[in-house]
Image 1 (cartoon, rainbow, N blue to C red):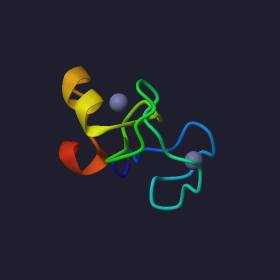
Image 2: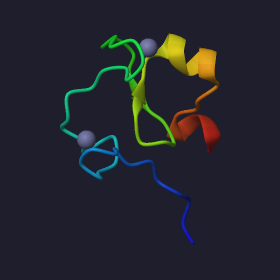
Image 3: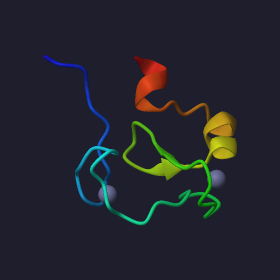
Length: 59
Ligand SMILES: [Zn+2]
Ligand SMILES: [Zn+2]
């Protein structure tokens, strides 16, 4: 099976095709927001704080 692709929990599309408004689900920051494995978007600070990884970071 191919590597698991992260998908947006709202639209079920991968990050590159997701057209949802992207903001950090914890702090509402809109800068540096990336999708992580739970299908939600987090800013850089929150990803570091929670040890969440983007698709490229786990590959
Ligand atoms: Zn989406
Ligand atoms: Zn945040």
